[in-house]
Image (tube, rainbow, N blue to C red; front, side):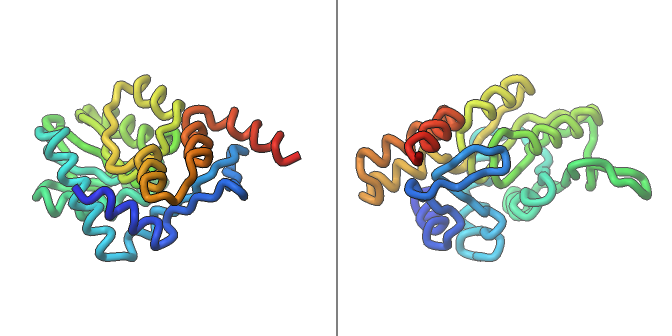
Length: 215
């Protein structure tokens, strides 16, 4: 799998940015040393092909019984489409909420009670959006055997939420792998790597320390 090349492309194309000197403020109030915009991946053919190949490989390995690939609206849909094509499997997609007109569908595409669905999203922070899609599919009486993602921050809240939903997550890339590669390539000092490593384990504590140090 070309994970090193994917990570390098994410950095080169400014899809992933890391800045310890001026951390990014998320809407939740958390300060973070990382900012990501994975929607940009769909505009870079070489990168999206590597991602689709990696996701397809992960699904074949971890979910060999999958019969349907599902995309989580909106960012997961294009990746799901490319993966479904590679695996020659049917494609569905799941809206954040049911349509307020027509048949009021939340799930588009054809699934049956016998199907085994793998849902794909681009980015996992706390897992709320994709787990909402998991619930929607399960409410139709269909088995969701797991989730695949392009990237995960590896936050404790995500671990708790996926465990509570009894749902397996298989990410292609992780924050921990990203900073490890950066450290290996001497992009970060040992001290910087240590600071980066503590963020995803306890982001609110990290935020308090950074705010205190800035005063």
